[in-house]
Amino acid sequence: MYIPADKKKSKSFEGYTLIVPAVSVGNVGQLASDLLISTMWLERCGFIYHDSILPLVGNDPYAHPEADVCKLVTACEVYESKLHQLVIIQQRAPFVKGKMSSFRRWLTGWVKENKFEKLVILSSMHAHERLDIQLQGPQFRYISTPDLEAENKERFTHDVLKWIPLEGRPSLEDPEGSLYLPGGGIAKSLFEDCSKENIPAIVVLVFCAEGDNAQDAVKLAYNLNLWMDLIDFKPKYDLDGKTIIKPASTWRVPSSWRLLFGTAVDQTLFH
Image 1: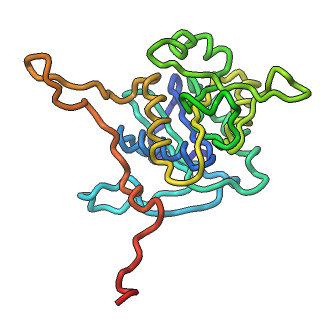
Image 2: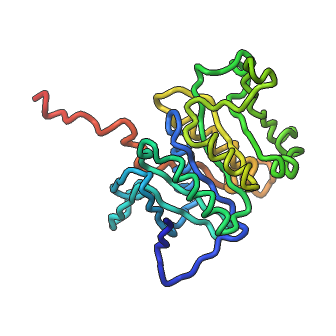
Image 3: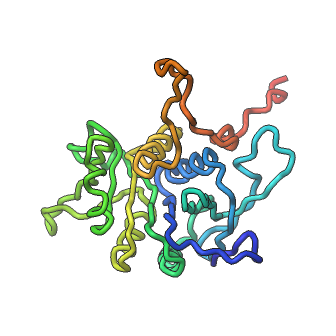
């Protein structure tokens, strides 16, 4: 269930866009969500408690060097931007085995109950599962429900975005190709649930392998921002109109990324 951070305030998300990262290969969806939450200074508006997600507690991953207050975070939290009418769910723990479907049912029900305008699923796929046609060129793909595709098709395929729809995987039963997202976690099943429930949804993903996936996350967040225009990366100019000063904004990497591969070895062990 969803638990608001301030129970005294009633909150409606009608007309908002909901972004949900899928726990997938390289955790690229979660890392991209980290970038968006940190760069946009999103406010934590609530928590999600569901028995399908393993419990977790830890320090604030978005704490800045000058922060003097320690905030705890839990397994699944909700962040909001009122300015952009945007909500991001950040999931920090894996699903309990066999419980993923119950979370999907709850999530689709919550989306409909709160009348979100659309659902954006951030995910990734195993690079070694690519088709021959996918080996070269952009490693970014998308899948969209028909209504959202019809609304944005010109922009998706136009020169500005040049997004490539995810190619179907041909089989003996389906020569035309079916939806195939190896390593994509909940992305495929959640997308199919949204299609059945007539919820406008889109999956944006990258091909990758396990390892240091920070650049994959930047790529995913960058492509999403090209479409949604959440963060202004346009350069500023001097009074002469020619000299570039700096971009209006850059990605603000969360402090937690310094420990992405654990803490450094204690050097006193070798004294």
